Length: 287
Image 1 (cartoon, one colour):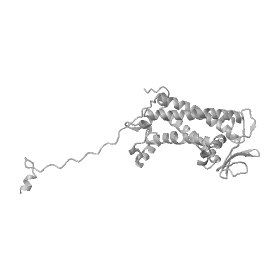
Image 2 (image 1 turned 30 degrees about the horizontal axis):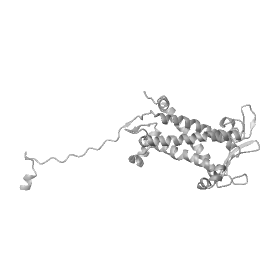
Image 3 (image 1 turned 30 degrees about the vertical axis):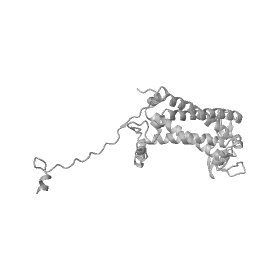
Image 4 (image 1 turned 90 degrees about the horizontal axis):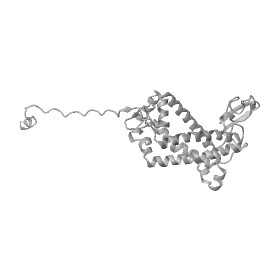
């Protein structure tokens, strides 16, 4: 009886059960802040010009020998995994033994004057437009220095001012498969909102991490590895990739992967508030 009385409150009623904790609401979503710092804006546009020039001059360099190999050596007597060539009056692209007719686009096409040319890539896609390997190499190596030191400067400044930590670094919760899948679904619906306090959503962060810290540095390293001068002085870069020709193949694949990223990036900008995004990446202001 004493125990029963002790269990009652002064009013003689049974104590109310402990309140159940309310579930915490998910992090609020918001439209990301599209304003960017001066360093990011400068590097973005300088890097864009450098990448386009490197890509187009690289295509002219590729025209000198439009075949790709794996390993250390490559010549017309070695098996190539990719070939852009012609057979008779027809142009073709061959990958792994599968051949696709590319007449009029690659290998065999008419120039601006209607003259048929036999070259892997047409003049409108290359720098210079007329076949000139020496000039293409000058363009390529000049902008390679701008590209490499621009990337290095951006990385150093972004580490020092905390830009990478604040905006690009993935948080622990963002690695959860459910969060990543939801972000992918949202992107498919053209919903680019981010969690409160974050500049980018997880898919955007992973994309920028892959490009800035993986693809762009690999472009520099593979470019050095395939260079005869670098290979003569430091042989280890080409050894890392299994030979100079393997480095050349990876360089080619990375170049077209970055081109695909740029096309997708521009397409998403055009589909989602282009004027706001352009203002944020030029004058750093958002109305």
